[in-house]
Length: 172
Image (cartoon, rainbow, N blue to C red; front, top):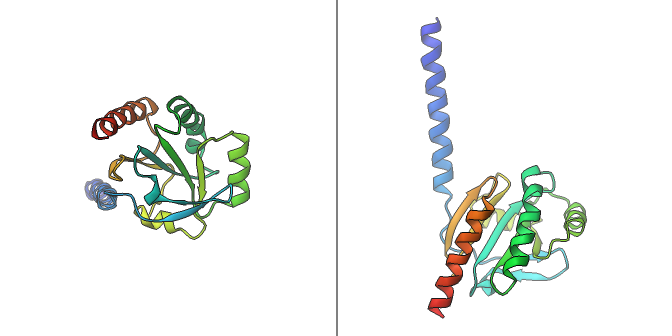
């Protein structure tokens, strides 16, 4: 009996790994979706208007400990580089109550854009986001150059943003 169980467990594990890999590969986004979202301060942000500088988009939730851990690092990156060099948009997941998003954003003194995705438009447009944090680094032309699920490496992100800035400066 044991001889049959081990190969079966191995096959199930392999099938699961292949399914997850195919899921992650199939949902790769190539360009910035043409959507608009409401921000926590009552403005409407249109993604097509953000071209011209690198853009970092992160999907997060107030219940996500990794997301909360990333906030101070993103705040520092944003403050170090300045709004003229990098735009950051943190999109709260549809299940996140707006009052909690606003409260946490104020408590953490988030200087970058925090948007609400109440009806799930952004989640769908960015490839049916299921896991937080999920992030996208987008170049000045609107092309997605990196997609990440899970905790970001802030040092690597900083280097990639600086490289994108050089490319943007060279093109301008």
